[in-house]
Amino acid sequence: MEQSNRKWWILVTVSLAVFMAMLDITIVNVALPEIQKKFSSNFSNLQWVLNGYTLVYAAMLLPVSKLGDIIGLKKVFLLGLSVFVIGSLTSGLASSHLWLNIFRGLQGIGGAAMMSLSLTIVTSSFPDKQRGLALGFWSGAVGLAISGGPLIGGALVDSLGWRSIFLINIPFGILAILLGIFFIQESNRNSNEKIDFFGFLLSTAMIFTMVLALIQKEMHENYSWIDWHILSLLSLSIVFFIAFLVAERKVKNPMIELSIFKNGSFNGANIAAFVLGAGLYGGFTYLAILMQNYMGYSAFETGMKMLLISGFTIILGPMAGIISGKIGNRWLISGALLIGAIGMIVLRHMMKVPFEWSYLIPGFVLAGISNALVNPPISNAAMSSVDPKHVGMASGILNVFRQVGISFGVVILGINLTEGYNHSLDKQMMGVQNIPAEFKNQMLDVFHKTGAFAGSQIFESKQAEVFKQMPAFGDIKNIVFSAFNTGMKDVDLFIAILLLIGSFASAVLIKKRKPSNQTAVIHMDNAASENSNLK
Image 1 (tube, one colour):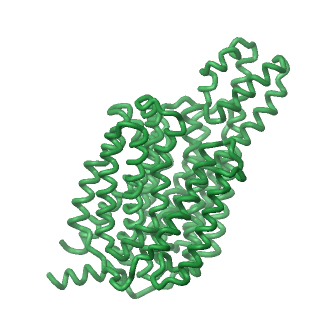
Image 2 (cartoon, rainbow, N blue to C red; image 1 turned 180 degrees about the horizontal axis):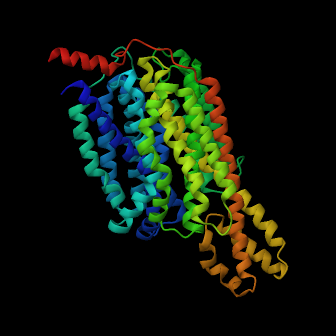
């Protein structure tokens, strides 16, 4: 097959793979109630169905990127796909929550290989002039998977049950493996480079402990940042980070070539990826809670509404790749993040109680445009700012920044929402005149224990039965909803600040790339030419 046609099939293959990898981060949310019923599991065990995948996925992004450079991109990518399919099959057949959590970790290993190496493969397969367009399609698959997870998950759970969200990966995974075997060409291996086992262990431990600390904070709202459960993990992460920096300066073949961080464009792209993950993608969690627990939408209906954000990636994602070639990555990233910040400010201004869908539409549209425009140039800026031999490494680092950003955002935004909710709740309840003080304290105790995320479920609980007899019950419900609105406004403002920081950093750090006459400098391009000569 001609190389011009082959590269588009490569793009289809890797886009399918990254769609599955990212989808499995978000799709499980809507299946948790069914999984809980099946295994009679407590909430802590249930959360590990989500966090087990995320934790292993984040920790393995750097190691698999390096293995791809040493062993070969195609081999490691297909191996990752195979591990992901096996993990999906075993997760779908799991007989207990413990085995499900273990198999989700197996999925995470495969997902990390698919996600990290796919970006390297796309970058390596396309010449400079077409790379932006290709990365636009790749980014569209990522954005669609993240925001489309609730819709797809809701449809599968409602029609086929919770096991289907894992088993659905098997036919598509096998298809991707077959396409990969046929179309992806192996990259040139660096036979002189050896695996940096010490760097491997330190980098994995660093990311593992950092993300685990964030997960602990997310799972235990009552833990402060200086609680030993969190502080010990964060301290360990810092120790591993320092040890990693020292070790990488001394070894001959480091896990990460630290000199790439001297490049301003590479740093700007990573900052943009982090704030996008922390702000926009982290915020999706709480927009879903708003729509399901306070506006009464089902998981499927919530997914349909979220398409207003993700749908833009289908059209604007490829266009963004073309535009970045015209105006440069710098201004497209900066402008797109600015649009996202404006969207969050508009959303903050429009939201009020009682919540209505029409209040969310303008902010969702701007967030969707931002999401669609920003991903392709972030990937392009990061990958084009490093030497070809460091492309795999750059891909792993970029994905780590994005994934750690998502984990950080979910935790920090959750803290902002909870603090805003509790402060507003206490203030408003103290202002209610026709309820005895002891009942106020009882109600506040119930509302604080159930938390900001319970929504309408608070008033369906047994603890709240006594309050329904009170004349002021309608006012109390309005107070709870208003308190959540206050918390969401704090979240929207924080997201806007994050995106503005990213917009400013991108404008300052990312430089216009100097035009290059070399269009075949990447490993796979060399491999392609060698293969064509052999033919």
